[in-house]
Image (cartoon, rainbow over all chains, first blue to last red):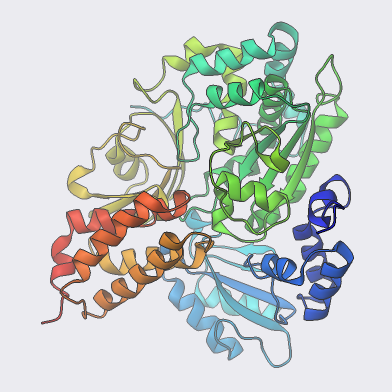
Length: 147
Length: 403
């Protein structure tokens, strides 16, 4: 063991935490490729496993390539009560993909998400960081066409 | 009991993008009073006397938390605002942040003065990224007016840290690990955050709604606040109502109001079968108990109210609730990681009408183990909906046992 302070602890004084760095890397690359995870570990002098552990822990970080637009449909109970299933089926039908998949042209990824805090206007989804509420299948088709 | 606006006092009244509208409502008068007239110990004493309990669900006395942090030794201390509301059915903090970010900043500054912290963090859930610009703008305006600048020993700096999608980060120690850039896993306690929190420094961590109560308590006094509510639950509570209601939304009621008043009179629910109070981790209240008071003496949680009408299938709802926990368990402790998975498997069997004879008994003993031995609130509360529906809707389970 060396006595030098480990990267993860010294970082907070300056440029931000490992989580922040991972988010920045994802913004740059669209996801977190293996090489990026390894490089980050090396530059911070912490084990790759530790970096991968953080990268794989958070639902908004991805170690697999994602489409340009990441569609996240809320599947929690309040949205379920407002028929989020119909929203999911509409998106699946329009894009021809299932949750966890990306369209061949790389334009859209579809994911299911837990509660996004828009239960008063369920069913809801996000595309990248934009929130869409009070959804109906018709509304969803319009939104997808504009992407 | 009536609706009363303490927490939501400025919502819809001020322009959240313009600090002058906040100032014209008496904004920053509480911080001024604290800095000018009260010693830090007096601020803490006032909060203690008010009887304010944490609004994130656990209900710990806020003043006491502040006192512990204030008495802890160390130069560097932190104030954290927990804006990671990920509880299913909760959106009250989003409502508050969207409409009155200034009160929150003022409250954090008062907290900083009280415990001797110069630095505050707002931990904002990534799903609320759309609020980031508004919050940053509010902080810049407060700084621009000099409210957070050095006055005597006081100086306060607020930074926003965004999460990255993890329900467990609403748990205070997991949240601190997340700010430190790690996996958001709950820590063993003790040590508790007021003695060793963020980066091992004394830290207070308060829910958005808890903090919103601070400026009015400082301005109007603890006696005023103490007169509102019930014996053990002072003040008001903000609720997020969703599900089978005609008027979903955010409501603020005096503590001790009945669930019936909120759900039927205000949110206009009809033919109610049951209500989940406190979201996925909350209690399931069947309709015959709809008069239960909303208070720490009754049911409360973080104020998520999900209403189910008579057409809903109890076990379907419970299975979906458990699926949430199985996905969101951080995996650090065995009872939660394995327990939520096994419960999900059993509940899925019931959903298909293929429950096994020993399943009900297994659910009960597993619930017991999880509640007693899980490391944090997630695993301890995950079985709540199972336990409550087994108590109130046992026949729904029994009718789906095979053979």
